[in-house]
Image 1 (cartoon, rainbow over the protein chains, first blue to last red):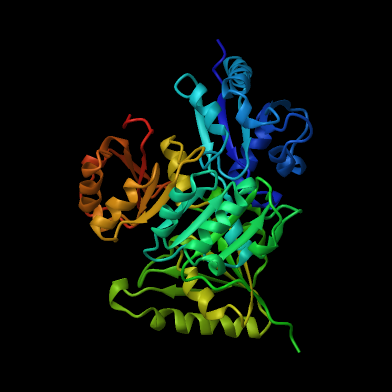
Image 2: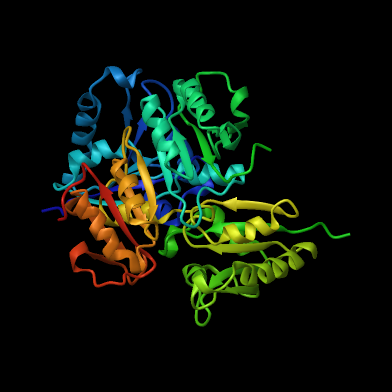
Length: 235
Length: 235
């Protein structure tokens, strides 16, 4: 009987191909099968990050999202993807799922993990996350000392965003996208507009750093606002 | 005239030498001078993480902390260290400061950064942070979807810890150390004890994962409690 394969959740980092870890790279090159999230049509960002590192000859599973993530039940995408991956694992083939940033930090890997954990051996290789990448690009410390640091998804309700932001010294507001104007209102209310920095696609070739008041909504999905009460004003 | 050197803040990751990025490794090997935090006596953890990667022949600056960090003013340690680094930069030599985890995420690099920024060219290479490393080791997703995720330094006041923890779906309580019993009380009050996982020195060779009620205080400095309201109970 063949020993079952291992599922690797590989953090490939925020975008710059050099921000992958040695460990993820080693696993990536060793597995016979890779899987990655992809849009309904066109190339996968996660695969693009590691494209130059791929040894060739690997089987590939593109986990394609529907055009509007809100209009499809996750089961329709992740169910079949998990089944396809499980088939390889049962046949003794290791599978690496490529994850932008870190697999367990707001990643879609979670949907595969919850379907496959328990039944299969899983190893997660942590990766460099986008808040850290954004801070590095912006030359702006994220948190220090006894700061309370909070990660706030921008789709949250305006009042909740304001309350949680008020209770922290520093924050990363993620998934800004079409919530840009709400985020600006919240920052203005709290007097934090000049402590906020906007960045999109950090460390990717299309990276953009702009003053928050010069961003045209909607922002892209891969956009973030970093805030620090003691941080420098926009330079 | 010699062109001035660049100061690199290199995230070397949480402890496993393979969790360094390709980028940090490249910079590490290229610079003539490295600097790193170290205890008042004995070896530096940050240097230990990269020891096998060092090319040899580099000048080294150990930034030695006093025995009790609370009893010394930062200026006495970081002032002279920043001066020593600046001397190399002015002479045209690049200097890499080795940072456990990520340089801008609760790192002591901040103290050098605030003394040298503006006067010198600085580039930060982000690294894998300890919350992500802990989540990977614990096989426990850190945050997903529209979770509010908060990082709470355990030295904070008990009431503040409780309030901030109550306002988040997921949390990483860092710097647990001698605050272990306070952290346990807060978790118990909020009914989160069975949603909390304790880990120390994640990805290092001395890594320990233990049920929270079996940890003898004080915990080491490199210890963390991860909490998720929807997370699985301790397995």
